[in-house]
Length: 107
Image: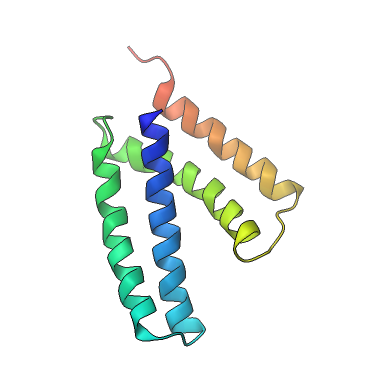
C-alpha cells in the first residue's frame, strides 16, 4: 500500500508541477506559477527514491503506468475533458502492466 501511495504522490507532484508551468507559459499566468511548478517538479524527482523496490528502471516503468491513470483523471477533474472508453481501456491495460511488473513472482 505504501508503494501505491508513493506512486500517487509522485504522479500528483509531476502533473501538478507540470500543470503550473503550463499555466505560466501557455496561459500567461504570473511567474510564481512557474517557480512553484518547478519546485513541485523537484519534489517529484525525490518521491520515487522513497520506494522500497531495488530497481530504478522497474520503479520508473511501473510509475509510468500510474502516471497515465492519474493524467486521465487530472484531465477529467481539472481540465473537464471527459475520458472516453478507449482512455479507460488504455488506463486499465497500463494498470495491469504495473501490477505485473511490480508484484509478479520472480525467482
